Amino acid sequence: MNLLHLFDLSLIARRDQIALEWEGAQFAFGEIENRSNRVAHALRARGLAKGDRLAVYLANRIELIDLYLACVKLGVIFVPINVLYRDREIAHITGDAEPRFVIREEDLPRLMSDAERASSERPDEDLDGDSPAAIIYTSGTTGASKGAVLTHNNFAANAVNLLTMWQISDRDRFLLALPLFHIHALGNGLHCWLASGCRMRLLERFDHRRALDEFDEFQPTLFFGVPTIYIRLLDMPPDAAREIGARMRLFVSGSAPLPANVFDRFRELFGHAILERYGMTETFMTLSNPYIGERRAGTVGFPLPAFPCASMTASCSCVDRMSLPATGGVRTPPPRPSPKAGSAPAIWRHVPTTVTTRCSAASPISSSPAASTSIPVRSKSYCSNNRAWPRPRSSECRTNCAEKSRSRSSSLRPSPNSMSMPSSATAASSLHRSKSRANSYASIRSPAPPSAKCRNISCDKECERLARGQRGVPAPVV
Image (cartoon, rainbow, N blue to C red; front, side, top):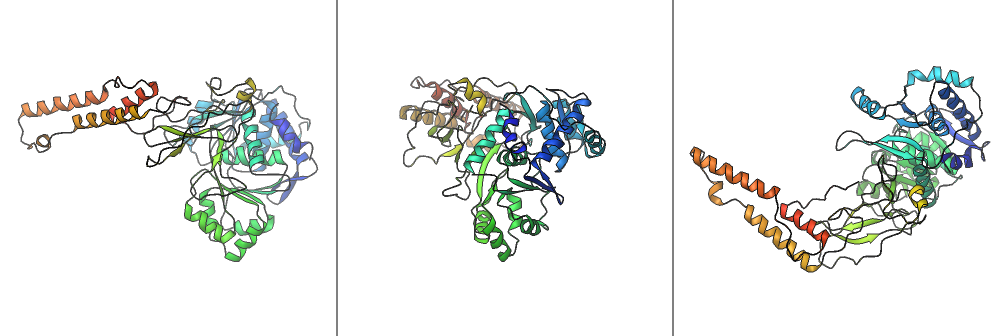
């Protein structure tokens, strides 16, 4: 199985239905199929083969869809580049991904001219679900962008999840204004469109000056946006907003936290509670508010199928588990007791790793080979020793850790005399202070061993971290 088996539900089975609206023109699914086949042959004529990488530096347009589908059919790895990036960022991505070609807007006329003369028959290529489909680069908030290798199975599992949980069908009319170089529009928008067979209008970008006209002309039932878009939509006249809301079925928000006041104001104006969800480039969508049921402002809802999550206290103790019934042979962890009254409030943290990372191993919670290839299921919680499901600490261990932390803090607290030393201190006093400071630093770097009372391995790790004064969440081990 590969993505084409999912896409053929529309490209072949609905070939005569209108699929796409772009710049005033309409295209049937059969036309989308033929266009992408011709582009695939044109790319193959340029020497691209299965496993090669093709970087694409384009804004939203129908040719971008042609290129993505052509890459899927050839087994070529699609590498989209943010159109806001400039030479430095582009050089990083091209140097890391090592694409065979980079296609820009000025390259399209010649490529599409060659495609018009190519065959409209689908090229034959041996693909399976584990074949890489794309390398999507992260936003790089903590450093240089990282390339996430995403397979056919990853894209397909995410699409099937969203079609099921958000009830997307061929009866929907989908307005897409998000950039296709991002996982939000590519992984969610494009794949849900092709898998469901709904009708989509693609916009080059979101323009708040044209938003009212686009909603009135196309009359969508489904819309994906980011918080800044929803803030702009709040400027619509109340009568127009209520009319749009009466036709709409679902508004979805992601890629950034949606402010609670925007959620409330939007519900008052449009009559819809925005469905907020959470995901990452590496893992696709992992949590979502329910389609049927209460959607709470300031939350991202519940784990999607096969994505277990852990609830944690501020001291990184895993106190609760949360997961929906998993499919595909995935084991969910046993239920854990809820936190005691008066304990620190639980914080939802989910650190999933996906089977598509370049050096990923087999899933530690998979009970069948099919599970590791059908959906990303590896997940490691932020816990004391980065184990997937650590044992809870006993009350004795918790007391021990707290005492060790207090004793360590008191031993490192400077004396009042050292804080009030005059600036004209002698060289000997300065040398003494330097040595004391060095000893303090050494004691922080080399914490005392965990207490002998602590017999829990996971607690030992936490004892050490508390002794060092590091109460922050540790980095996950992938």
